Image 1 (cartoon, helix red, strand yellow):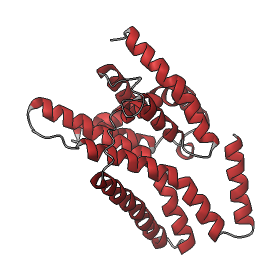
Image 2 (cartoon, rainbow, N blue to C red; image 1 turned 45 degrees about the horizontal axis):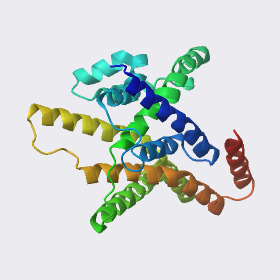
Image 3 (cartoon, helix red, strand yellow; image 1 turned 180 degrees about the horizontal axis):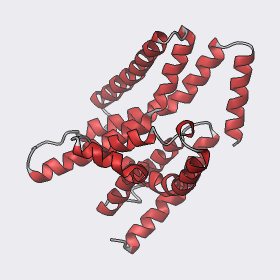
Length: 262
């Protein structure tokens, strides 16, 4: 499995994904976007330098399931309950927080897993996911992307806003929370990857004759996640600057500047 071709492809992906991710972070954008752009540039959509393969898909899947190592019991329990193991990993992540465990234990977990997951598995996952994007620049595809993206933005804005209002946040604060939640594109991409894997298994078993997601639908969902994640910090900054005043605005602008310098 560990062939020269695979090693070269991994080195190419990582060599481009690391600086691209650092560039996006420098611009105040999520590192995930830089890794997706890496996949678009290296994959069939643009330069076709790296092609999808079973070995890369396997490593990308490790990127999804690596978090479960720290909570194997949760993942197994989720599978026994008829749920996907990603659900177990997500629930396990809710318990790996500073607020509910000793700080030394939390730091030890972070030291062991951060480098491997963020430095290796995550870039491979997002880059390889972008390899499967096939752009169809026609009116129907553009309308599909627009409809899904608008629905995602409005859905999070309204859904999270109503939830925040019910907890007696102001309309301004609820709007800011809604804009901020648009940055959760990584979760959507994990779900898309799970659906693709399930679809391939069902097709191989002959259970279904058509894929659960067409190429256009898959590409539209990935583009939606990219666009909403890209817009989240921009909309969040705009909403804070427009609605906040005095010390709130100054603190936010200082925080934003410090983050970009880091």
